[in-house]
Length: 97
Image (tube, rainbow, N blue to C red; front, side, top):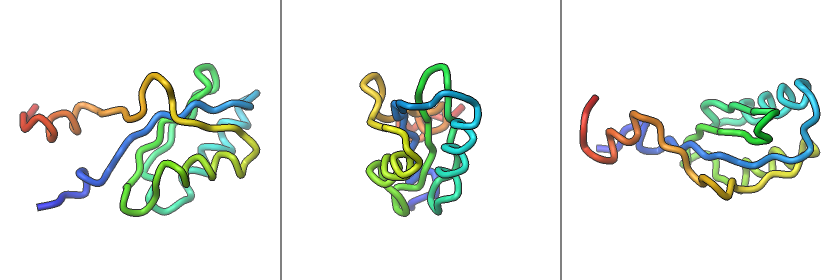
């Protein structure tokens, strides 16, 4: 059985060109308005965006295009391509909380 969570992914993207809180708001709004994006956390200090999305509806390249369209440069984070939260680790390992 496939659950909704099995199709949900979380990715960390490095973002260049952000200068202020308005940049954060612009990117957060641009990402979350797209179907398939569940959540977007944009961090000005870390210059990154962590996006939770349904991989049946949108993929990494489209997320990067969305950011680029707003005038910023984005790429996969070198340190972490995918970020697993506690619930996803439990599902993958077969353990429960």
